[in-house]
Amino acid sequence: MNAMSSTGRRAPSPTFIDAARHQIRDLMMAVPGIDSVLLSSTDGFELVSVYKRSSLEGGKMAAVSSSILALVEAFLGEIDLNGCQSLTLEAENGKALISAIPAPHHPMVLVIVTSPTVLLGHVMHATRHTIQRLNQLDQQMHRH
Amino acid sequence: MQRHKIVFGGAMGAGKSQAISSLSEIKVLSTEAFNTDDAAHSKLLTTVGIDYGEISLDAETRIGLYGTPGQTRFSFLWPIIAKGSLGVIILVDHTAQNPLTDLSIYIEAFGKTSDNLIIGVTHIDQRPDRPTSIYRDWLHQQGRTYPLFFIDARQREDVLLLIETMIASLEAQLGSMGS
Image (cartoon, rainbow over all chains, first blue to last red; front, side, top):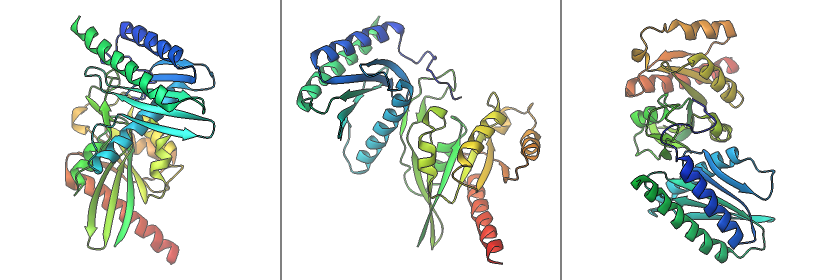
């Protein structure tokens, strides 16, 4: 119990992690207002993190964001709204987007932290593309 | 109608979700995710948010049953969930590598938010070589006197015993304060 990192065979492969890191870097290049991106498993393990601000703790962010997404999904289920895709949090000094990646082999959570001035539509459009790519990678790597 | 809250804590795989499922009279709200850490436990799904169920003890008393995620990376949620509860039932997996360390972790964590702790040890039948007396001995060494039960989380009567003990314990505390 209480392992701080996911080491089991159910975790994504190092090849997938490398490919995901490339996708995340592409996302950050495409949208200059993104400060940090974290990819985690739905059970709260950090898989990839790329930060412009070093003060963030990836392990803690992974656990908290997976809980938040699961709680929101449960809440939506109670009000007959299914397939929670993302939630947006707006604070005084920035925004956070928490998105579900319903990849069939490794369902994941993507957390994006942005500056307050970033255009949300721009972030969401680019994020949708990244999620599609991560989904495709998950399926490709399980075919081989 | 009085509404109360009782929380289930303890390690992944100790039986918290099962206990709530065994007891709840409503469809349990669960926040399970695919468990990628099969080195820690082989089960496929694990709670990452809360479980929520309800049970009526009598016409006037309804208990909300709250399950917590067991892994310590989710410990930020424990005090949030335990706040305002009547008490916490700590479940310990008897087959765990070190169940006394687990017990120590959850007593330490939940003891900060509740004085009313009850311990339920599960999966006893799966480790007949490990004496069950280790828990009583350990509690005695620590100078702690929490109620201790050996239960099967799948058995409604077993889990109900924990709830009823918690209520009785509270009533006894209230009675002694009033006398």
